[in-house]
Length: 171
Image 1 (tube, one colour):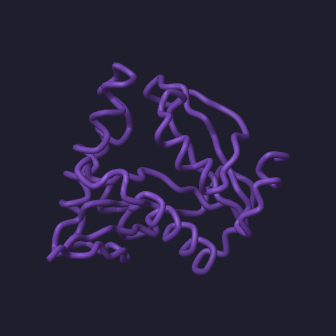
Image 2: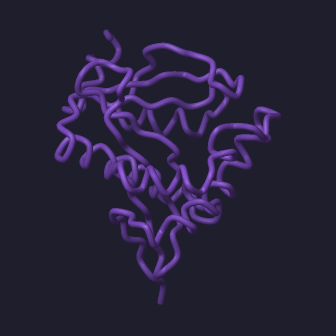
């Protein structure tokens, strides 16, 4: 009999598992871009610990194992009320089972309820088709692009907190 995966808020005791999971999950992105200096791979443990303390961080658990994670915070550089979602990752052996969508939904719900976000913004690499499919399916639309500190071209996607994709497409 299999266990079910639960989604919950992360706490300090989850930091090391999130750190290791993030490193594992973003290897394929690094390979795709030929760049092993992408932000999720060079983030320090202390920096992650600070994010768990200040941001909304959710984890997917299979028993005691953290098998997915996502972060959410209000975007200090975006328009007022913009919730920033980032570093969504699911253990490779569990990808394709809807955990990414569940984690994304948890981050959106938390940002709307606890931080009063009016819209959500996230980014992904321009070659990351599985990520783009997930975000489009969740109602996100591209609103621009930028180059990350690591030199990777990132697509910026947004959606209204009410789920109105037309807002994001016109923004």
